[in-house]
Length: 329
Image 1 (cartoon, helix red, strand yellow):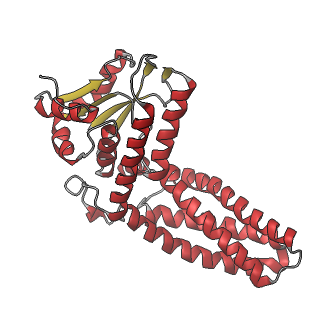
Image 2: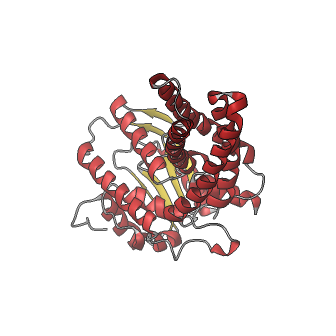
Image 3: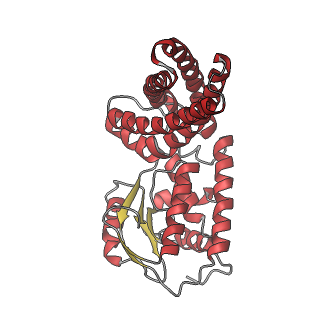
């Protein structure tokens, strides 16, 4: 194939994959940082039909990575940002070692807008949101010290890409309509806006329940104990309700793990609300009951926002939701 007239990894991959008739399409970075011993494990699940896309990951157990602390920090921060903002389930978006079935590529490539380094991330986000199966392979990877990638410009382009995809998710315009699984099973919409509305409704009920429990427990348990008990009971109920209503999970598979993770998220909410209460009592040892409740409600709202972000990025990420649904069907 002739060289592409314009630069850009995404543009080059789009051109190469679009012109190929091979049943499985793959690429590896030209510097061969990834050990090719992982090629067969990469393409095998695609050949068998088990998965739609396969990616190498430098961040999974079993991976062996040699690179400087700067690139290590950048890679981990980028993927953590993806998990917290776009709630992705895959672990390593930018590893230059990926494969896709040709029939899947033919449906996905026209939907990907980016032609640069963000191409990989956008393709994976669209695929994951469409319910396609992404297989991850731990790889051995050695950093190329002579890499000429402009880190600053690439990072800025990636941030713009994340912002664009985030807006499309919020507006429900991410182009997955033709790929997404039918919603006939009654699962709630996967879009950010729909999840926010459902989470807000559950949160509103939880907040009312929290205030009622706190007011009821305060005279017998004291401020701190009443706050902790009310928040704990509401956190358990909140996790169960969001598991079913916001993120569409049914059955018992993973329920205990989700509650355990929810309790860890609860400790963050407890720190926020208890810290606010302690600060109030330090500035005013005998605050009015209305002031005390108002401070706690404000702190609880902040804790609720943190809970939503952690639920999407960690407790119920999209990839894990797909696995749970597949187990229970």
